Length: 86
Image (cartoon, rainbow, N blue to C red):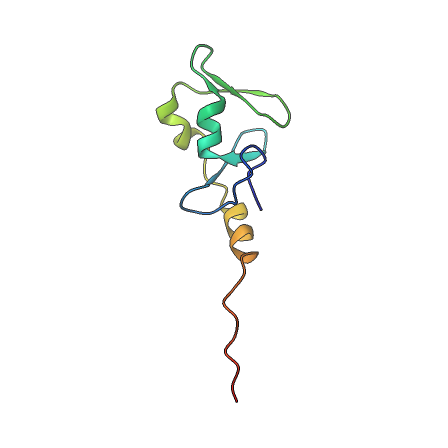
């Protein structure tokens, strides 16, 4: 489970998936790169819909964490191998 822009794996610490109003999710760092201050908008790289955003400091408030993707990514992470008993 990864961001379609940077290809980093989703997690709750570094590559946090944030949901755009169009329903697509990308990590917060990629949303910062996609933000256009001159037009005060961010264009979804998947469906190309523009989304209004006042400034770069409010992106984390405008586009909430996608908790479903975080949980799904966590469930796909490998777990430690079980200890074998002799």
